[in-house]
Image 1 (cartoon, rainbow, N blue to C red):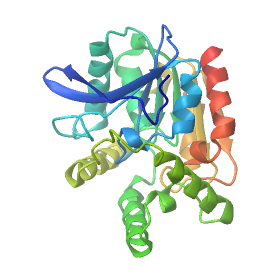
Image 2 (cartoon, rainbow, N blue to C red; image 1 turned 30 degrees about the horizontal axis):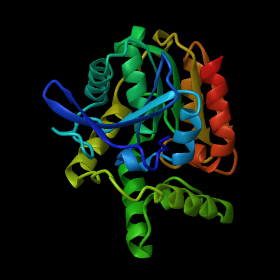
Image 3 (cartoon, rainbow, N blue to C red; image 1 turned 180 degrees about the vertical axis):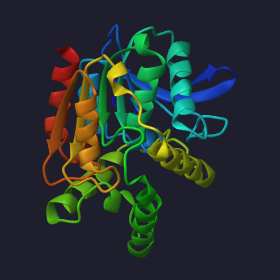
Image 4 (tube, rainbow, N blue to C red; image 1 turned 60 degrees about the vertical axis):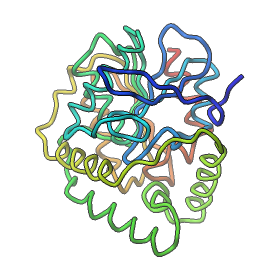
Length: 277
């Protein structure tokens, strides 16, 4: 039986664009669709989270337009990213799905729920906030600073963006990257520089957008984050949870943007219980 480190990569034609994706896990009527973070490709999903949720659900992760192994170009805004996700899900043949969005993937999940409300049963939104959240102008500086530190120390920028620079946070970061390295064959293409810049522009534009009416999202939503998120202020996650009609907020201690990875042993059971409720 496949696990996340060895499940094969597939390709699906969606309106003439080849979408790269992977799926595994127990057969379930409602699959869990994963929407990944800024600059991420399929190889950047934490195997412990993927395998943990796949123990009870069919899980499907894909590279959205212009990312990794998927063709075309990254859209200029979050709404178009949401439309592409909807097209991919429908091309798979599903009429009802659960969504798991991390970081910008959480923003895309909100777009999917607003554009196609009948498609979504439940959502998990981690390390993310509502469109129109304050402080988005800081994002390029935060990312730029992390990349400078990464270059100087020869580390991945996520060491500085996802995890606190405490002993506990550094240990969690090292363990996270060890897990990501478990897959050694059939690896995805890294995101291009052009695609990363397009994503950053879309994220920044989303932050300056007028706030969405989140009361229109009627489905249950599990909102999760670390208590010291540098990329998306933890208060934005709390604000989003307050504005959603049916939500549960979970904040993990002594962690940041990657809090759900740092605390995956607690987070996976939380997600499984939420999806089964």
